[in-house]
Length: 265
Image (cartoon, rainbow, N blue to C red; front, side):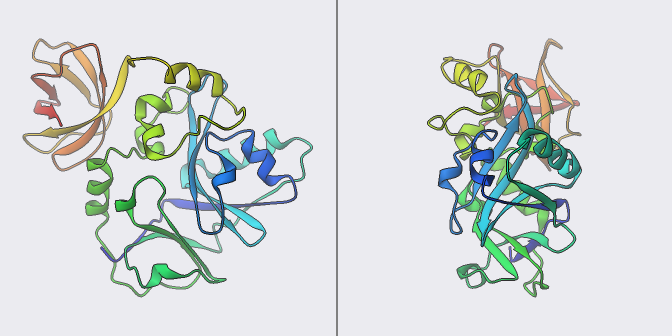
């Protein structure tokens, strides 16, 4: 797929002697997994264990870069500033200095330089390498729609698109299956709720891959049964495949979304 620019992504730098300890106390993943060669995907939750933000973290020189959704940039900076209190951590928006994209060329992915940082997407190997760069990438531009299809077919939710702030529980969205949660690290915001849910045998609602007979409608469209009973709702989709958050206690036979017949895969 070549190189796919991601204009919807922003970049924050964090640095200072307390940065790692600070992040370890607030994010869902284990900061000890992080290095210049290994990125982590993580969430920041509210005290009720519900989704606020998701992002990638990668170490580069003395900095830790946080790659996030544009729409959440200022919210994340303000939240981190509030949480760090007296800790020696400096937080800066560096989005104007760098671009973010996805790279599928193994030759360019072999090394990082001062002007670019490359790391494997930790959520799924088929989602390619993330790249943070200053200089123009001369690779052929890939098809973002095809990239989205790969993401959806592999049950990888896009946090800002698929999850709802202060409402979505990460385990219902399978975040633990895409390397976004550590159950072995110390405390973090919302941990008690996440751990309690992890001990449940069955969730009330869970994310499923669905396929429609025709193109699927807009995100948020209700999924209903043949008896017009609400079963869940559609999340992101491309053409006739999508992600749907469905009630696990109801039948998934003969479902419809916006008049389109769908089935779970």
